Structures are given as C-alpha cells and as structure tokens.
Amino acid sequence: MRRAGLRTRVTAGFAAGALFLSTAMALVSYQLTCDSLLDERERTAVRAAYLEAAMVQSRLTADRPDIVETLRSLNTGENRRAVIRRNGTWYARSADTGITAAIPPQLQQLVEDGRPAMQRVRTDGIPAVVVGVPLSGSTTLYHVDSLIELDHTLRVLGLVLTVVAIITSAAGAGIGWYTTRYTMHPLRSVANAAQEIAKGDLTARLDAATEPDLAQLTTSFNDMVDQLARRIERDRRFAADVSHELRSPLQTLAAAVSVLARRREHLDERTATAAGLVADEVTRFQYLVDNLLELARSDRPPDRGPVDVAKLARQVCRARQLPETLVESDDDGTEPIWLVDRRRLEQVLSNLLDNATKYGGGPSAIRLGRSHGRYHLEVDDEGPGVTPDDKLVIFDRFVRGRTAGARGATEGSGLGLAIVAQHAAAHGGEAAVRDRPGGGARFRVELPEVAP
Image: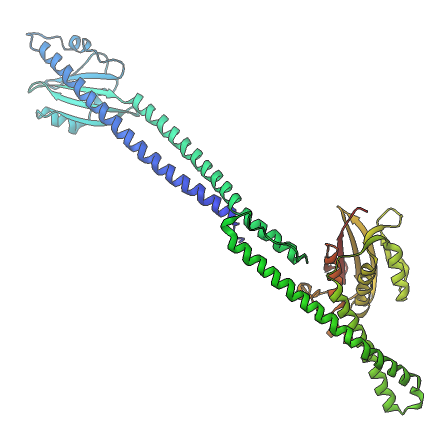
C-alpha cells in the first residue's frame, strides 16, 4: 500500500486534531449546558409542586372538598399536570392519559411514607420530572412536568455543536493544507533545483535570501552542487585529455597495422593471424577512444539547426547497407524538419542502429514523428528484447545487457547507448527502452520541440 504524501499526512493531522478538540469541547459544553438546564428545570418543578401543594392543602381542609375542582383551579399550563391520590383513589382535572402510570411505584412508596421525592421519567417517549409531595397521611400530590421543550432545545444544541465541530475540522484541514503549502515551498525549490541538476544543468542554485530560516540548507545545497560541478568538470577534462593523448599512439599503431595488413600474404600463418587480431583490437580501441571523447563533449549545449530527419535517417541506413524503407514518418508525407543538433542526432541514429545490428538481430523499423510539443524517434529490432533488470541500467556507461553476452557479442564497449542518453539529455529530452509488440525491443528517444 502506497504511503500518503507529507502534505496529505499533515493536513489529515490538522483535521484530526481540530476534530478531536472541537468534539471534546462540544461534549463538555453539551454536558455542562444539559446539567445546568436540567437542574434549573428540576428546581422550578419542585418550587411549583410545593406551591401547588400549599394551595391544594388549604382547599382540602373544607368539610366536603371538591378535589377535581381544586385541581382545575391550579395554573399548571400546557406542560404540567397535577394528580392527587387520596385514600387509594387517583384524582385528575381531566381524563387520565397515562399520567398516573408514569409515576414510578418506588416514588409513590416514598411519598406515601411521608417523604417528598423527585424522579426523572419518560411518558409516551417524552422526558418529564415527577415531584411527589405528601399532604396528609392519606393524601399525596404528584406534579408531572414535561421536559419536551427542554429536550428539543438540547437536540438543537447538539446539532449546532456537531455542525460547529465539522466546520472546525474543515477549517483545521484548510489551515493544515495552507501551512504545508507555505512550509513546503522551499522544499519544492530544492526539488526543482535537484531535478534540473539531474537533467545536466549544473548552473541551478538556491537563493538564500528567499527563505532565511533555511539558509544553512541553501548554503549546503549550493556548496554540494559546486563541488559536484567541479568534480564532473575534472572527470570530463580527464577523459578528454586521456582520449586525446591516446589518439596519437593509436594513429601510429593503426598505421603500423595497416602496413602489416598489406603485407599479410608474405607472413606465415601464425604471424598473419596475430596481425589480424592486433588490427581488430586497434580498431576497437579507436572506437572506444572516440566514444570517450564524445562523452566528454556531451555536456556542451547542442548546436541546434533545422534538420531533415527522414533524409538523415536514410543516409545513416545507406552508410550501414540497410534498406531505406525502414524509415517511417507520421508527418503526412512531408519531410519532417526538426530543430536539433545534426551531428548529435546522427550519432543517436547510428548508435541505435549499431546496437540493433549487434545485439537485436537487426533493425526492423525506424519511426519519426512529433506529438504534444515533442519529437520522437523509435528504433525497433528483431532480437530477444531487454530484461526488466537491464532496462534500469542499459543507458549507463560501460553497461552491456545480458543478451549481448548470450549472443556471444564481445566487441561492444558499453558506451553506445550511454552516448544516446547523453545527447538526448543535452537537448532536454530522454531515452528509454520498451518491449516491442510481437517481440524484440523498441528504443525511443524524445526531444522537446523548439521553435526556430
């Protein structure tokens, strides 16, 4: 499972923290408010019950009191009900709608024993408070106060607190996203600079004044790039100097070998064979030195100019005695003109064709085209393809794929595809290898299209 990015994790952390805090505050606020309102309502119910009890008791002192009329005289409102139990009989101001059934037996027992009592109950699913007040040994008054309005108020309060918690969480996520965007801006600058350096632009640097808090990182990064640039320049000069110095003795060896080759028929068989081996190795050595010199110069900017790439590809095919019909173009029959370095593109074509001939059973197609602002060049071969492991390193220097060894090809230097990749990078493009449909390998070079 792929791990979430830093921005996502930080945003989620802010959102979770805001949700936790807002939920905790909402629960505490709800509980405190609920307890406060209930306590106040219970105190109000108790005061009302005692007030009604005094009024009822004063009227029940008559010789023949009218209990129902007494209950009707009470100002109980819509949410309060009062009932009297006298000598085991219940009295109410109207028909009993389940009020007496809602009075718990335990509460009745306490009140009949002469002790006032209060208890929260639910009648018909509606919360209520029951207050019992003893009036005499045989008479008790029960005050049932409905909490339907308070229950509605608490429901609205809970809904409001929930919405506030959600909004707070969303605000926390927004703050986290903004914070990460702001704090990661310097890191994006580092990433962009590193990407430019990876593409070969060693002039990329970070501005220390942009983010003073990261001055040490900026200074260390720039120093690292300076050291890398100096090391690469030393390596390039070393390769160029060594290759240049090797050219003179190689030319001398090549001239001596050519003399031996012309007089080969006058040599004995063993000497002639040795002379042939020396000639092959000198040729291979010259090819290696030329490639090293090319690699040493590959970091220079390309000398761009309009190039008829189809015509150039056919010329490269003729030089290798390959059919010109291999070249295909998707430019509607017109000759494709690219703004590229002609010498470098010619070497890219030559190296890809040589690679296909040596290790891929020969090239089967050369396709040229452009799409989405990029040129592309593809060379297909008829070989066994490239293994997944080799695809990762095949464009590195001095790397030869396993298929080359399996086919017994030992004359390769492992620099041809590295030069292809270097020339593509010099243009701001890239080189890649894929599997060709039907078998074989497909080498693809993409270059950005530059307007003349």
